[in-house]
Amino acid sequence: MDPLAEGRDYDFNRPFFEQFEELTHDAKLLSLFSKNNQNSDYINQETDDKNCYMNAGGHYNEDCYYNTYSIWGKNNVDNLWVIKSERLYECIRCENCFNSSYIHECENCSDCHYCRDLKGCMNCFGCFGLRHKKYYFFNNPFSEEEYKEKVGKYLKTKEGREKAHKESQTHFLKYPHKAVNLINCENCIGDDLLDCKNMIFGYMAEKMHDCKYAYIALQVKDSMDLTSVGWGEMNYNIASSGDCTNDIALTSAWNLYFSYYCFCCLNSYNLFGCCGMNRYQYCILNKQYSKEEYEKMVPKIIEHMKRTGEWGEFFPISMSGFGYNETIAQDYYPITKEEALKKGWKWKDPDNKEYQPQKYTVPQPIENVQDTIINEILACKSCAKNFKVLAQELNFYRKLSLPIPTKCYDCRHLERMNLRNPRHLWDRTCTKCGAKIHTSYSPERTEKVYCEKCYLETVV
Figure 1: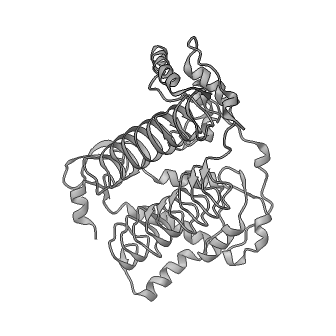
Figure 2: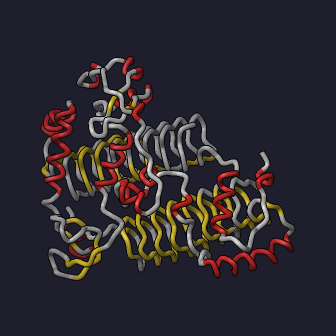
Figure 3: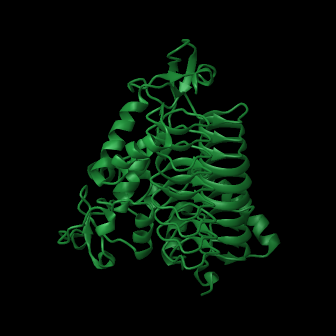
């Protein structure tokens, strides 16, 4: 299908966003935004995956399911922001980790469970803030035999794992928490930043240079106002895009250069207000122009958008084809249906067909679960929405002796999101030395929060 067939003249008597919204309704769009994937039909915002299912926002994964922002992963299930890791389950912000479950902010760890802020550790359980330790149980050392006996009582049953989660969260409150997680950073403000320089108000970002207001970003330079963006420079107001340079207001774009206000466009340059285009240049509202015509038209459109107050602004939320509660905005800034409708935003009501009562009783432990479970319809114990277990997923649970989940993917994802600190900084004082600090721990929280200097002096 030729996207130029939907091309139209620019009308200087109407606002740009009004014209662009009409184009998005007529244009032919990709069903999912993905690239170079193999046997991975149900993933979005992913590239270079193999045998993956229900992943979002990651790259270079194999045999991974239900992960968000996973990169170079293998055999991982239900994780958030894990990098170069294998056989992880319900982990958050981990790198170079192996065969572990329910660990948070850990690096170079293996066979660890229900831990937080570990580095270089093996066989640790319920621990916080350890460095290069082995066979530690709730921050106490044990022999290998004693450790395995204690851990086995927790990991063998669903009830034991629930107990481990509750006890570990309480245990973590005994130890100081670092105000913000900035690693190898220079002149940076934010949280969860790695190898960044001059990154101001950034969250969950790596290798960023001279950027401001970036959330979930990787290897971007000289840019501002980014969400889920990787590999680019000189960009402004970009969302869910990669390999873009010298662009303004793009979403779901890849390999776009010198382009403005485009949606779902790939491998192109010098586009303005285009939708669903691949390998084109010098187009406005999907209409082809010569180079000379294009360069004359664009300044006129910019001046028109300045008069209407649209230039420099991102696409208005009213243009979204999704209900507010269908988007990740609900993950970070949850609101009620009434609040959304009052603002004039869309909202998706539940489909009763997806909320049928569960008739199947899941056996415990996992060794008693038969292969036929993949044909059963389960119901989330939190929201009652139906879900199923994949054959590959079942094999993963068996390998790691994990119980079958009792909640749907959406509720499991929301629980992981709630374990993270918000994308916000508060002014506080270090619990130990009283120095003024910026931190993602709100003043109402009970954790002891240390400045970086005091924190480094106390880690084991």
